[in-house]
Length: 382
Image (cartoon, rainbow, N blue to C red; front, side, top):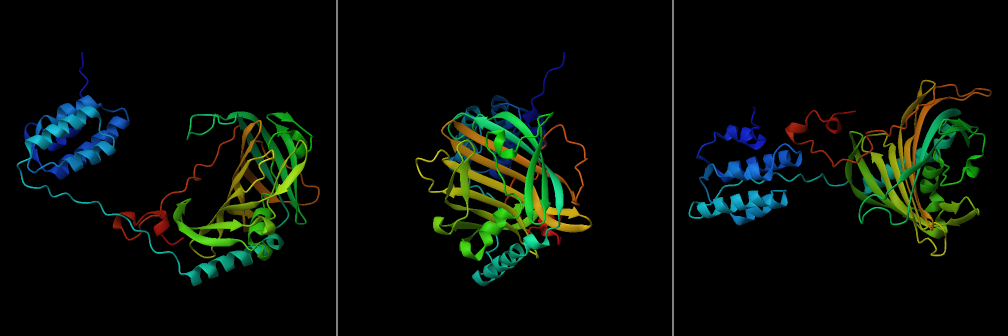
């Protein structure tokens, strides 16, 4: 019979167990590492507490350090063991604890630089429609529904998959056409608006054009630095008043529409040519008697090759709507872009499963001055 050797005891062997005298700094590092292992189900609170009984401190352990470790996730038995160590070490000299360096992000670009960057984006968007070639692509749209107030407070609603709509998107002579071809694996010939449920259009040039149209008079403010898809990214918040807005929300059943104010964030690549990589939007001040009480979108862009040229086009999106009958969430993926010619058909294989991209999560900015990050993608010249 083999006895299970506690993981935390194995780790503690690195500290030469057996009445070993260590500094408070070493103790803190050890407890933090073991707490992480416990979170991964690779040890227990009891095992960690037992291992702490085998050491002695060369410095005084303050209660503030114990409180910090408790905040990091140390369990009740571990905290009791630490309190015993604090009592045993109360007459020793004060501990010398290295404070971790706090990363301070670089200052934002100056207001003049911000204005130039936004002007570059505005000029790009103004010429965006004229630069786009005629193309076709595939959109896979997974539609979810959930009851109002679904899920626990603060948690994701209990969405369930309603259906998966596969559509052919045709962009021809600056006009976008969305044609459903499959519902699940069943061929369909119904117009998109007649499918029922939550629907969305205007994913290509419309959202950007509306926001950066000079007539919209959107107000932009610096928000933060971020890392998105390994790229150093500038994030600006924006708001558009209702009297200047072109943002429409509606219900397919009774064809009621409202124009609302809206706000959101625009993510812009920090390196020239300062491409827009993400656009979020949220309807504001929706009339209380309107059937839709929440409308939010996220649209991610990336460079797509069409006929040997690179164009900035959507590749993933999310639309959320809240109504009287429940909540809806549509996850959209755009793929298989190709040049459109009159008479061309969509012949590529339809994917069986919807696989969301794995690079959508915004990451904190990377400190490129830290030598440890010298090989990080945001710190390299792209």
